Length: 75
Image (tube, rainbow, N blue to C red; front, side):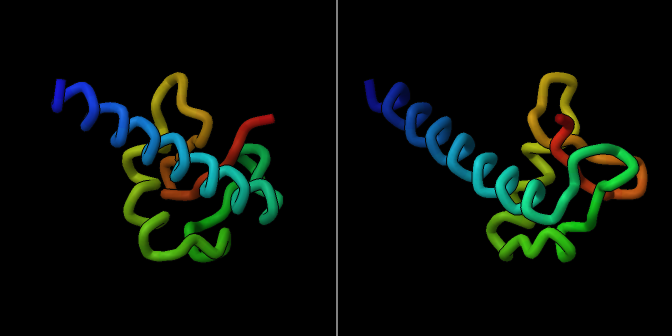
């Protein structure tokens, strides 16, 4: 039962962090591969910067990463 609760906490943290990062990328105008920005340009804080590597890039990820380590939210 404890393991299940831990997974819920991790899932909630991951979802929350992804939403924070998506919001900042959208605010920076990073809505396509051509408009992708750095983590600094998106004004990500240290915690968001650490999480973006886990969140970005997957086939079904809501945040995409380019080969040049730029990030965007496809719309």
